Length: 240
Image (cartoon, rainbow, N blue to C red):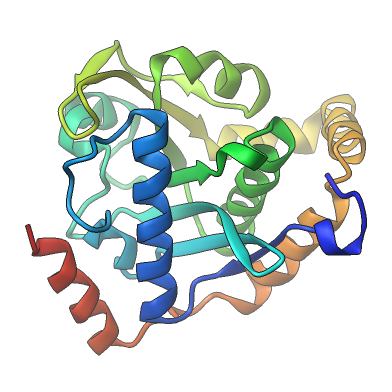
């Protein structure tokens, strides 16, 4: 994870419109590299749901350069991205009163695309969800070929059949979900399971990152962007 102090990865919450635009440009570049998006797409990729009330965008940086992004998107009147393709599956998982969030915009540079960084960003977002949000279900959309990684390592369960995703080069995609209440109960009643998570974090040298997420969850409860900045970002999302 770290070869020295200068190699350390820092994760912070996007706080300005510049942060959001910089992250969107990074996501565009990485989505093109990985084949999720085509070369002909517009100047940067954005999603107006990223500025839903209660949503957060996190940026991973090394030596001042963006090397990864991840977000947690609240299910408000604008909805969450996975409802566009997996609405029936989402409705099957959650009840009328459940509070759902989606983890999205998970991307890393090809130079740093290893499991430890994916784990670091995921756990940062996940812990933020668990501790600072009253959440019942967490969703994530992933390419079918990556689904086993999430179900085997990141506590997700499959929640849909495979579908062709029209927004991402018609790649095969699946919806995964975590029952947060069930997860918390498992942690509370299964000490061996909790100890196992601790060993994984220690092996990946991630305890410091988890502590960072714990601190962030206590201090980032409110939205960072002003209403004007949110309006600007939503406007940019509508530009073809």
